[in-house]
Length: 351
Ligand SMILES: Cc1ncc(C[n+]2csc(CCOP(=O)(O)OP(=O)(O)O)c2C)c(N)n1
Ligand code: SF4
Ligand SMILES: [Mg+2]
Image (cartoon, rainbow, N blue to C red):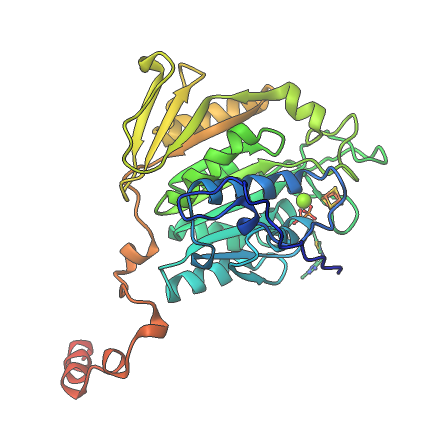
């Protein structure tokens, strides 16, 4: 693998955020992906979301599996913690890291092969446990890194670059995430930065399992006629149900549209989302309704995008397990070994 460091130079007039950081402070190495790959646009959206939220880079842990998509954490947040794990194993490594230190922001980055094929079980368990994370799948319908085999998210009837028809039914990770209890579920398109950036920012702020499926065309192996993950196909079939804005700080809310079409969602940690309805019938607080809506529209060949479900009252695995607040590496011997009398009590309760 080639690694090309970016020059550190910054123009003195470059835009800065509340921490005094510029976009450059959220970048990583120069991408080695194919020019035009959808994954690079997702990288740019992650950088933008972290810049806008004024996140301290050292507070982020970016964890990925294997694939072109899983290479991308090298191209953003170069000053953050990172772990490129084994193919399909990102969710268990992320879960362990999160349990050991709840103070970091966890970004799980994966591919459709990484999460819907080899890592399908891992994906399912991290979601159902409610791990506090922003789990992003860069979904191109193929194994890009190994040269374009159909992945488990490829639609039945879609055609490979060589003209082979896929005969297997697809896995819709958004539908599965909803069924397994994810508390923030969204779908977006790498080519729609305006939609994607606030969706990522909202997921980072959400306390609980946040899942985002980003359709991200592979220009080398899955951008031809007959593919349902090509730039043209996604643009033509994209059915956005809402637009999201992430409100930072406690500033008064300025709404430039009919107030009836905008809903403010206050999350558990006090962060606020402004949801602008595009489809009047769509309710992002109705899990069952979202599942039915998705299935109906998918049967009509439409790709539903937007914030599809949010539970503003959600909590996470730490709350479920009642774990200690302090990261494990900061616990002292006295915390870890509370003494003979406590041990005797525990033993007595087990007899
Ligand atoms: C255990 C294991 N099995 C298989 C592979 C080969 N392999 C590497 S990447 C990959 C698929 C990647 O597809 P996806 O997650 O969709 O990422 P993309 O390259 O499309 O972004 C496979 C099968 C591997 N590296 N490790
Ligand atoms: S092979 Fe596909 S997924 Fe991989 S870098 Fe190239 S365009 Fe992107
Ligand atoms: Mg893929």
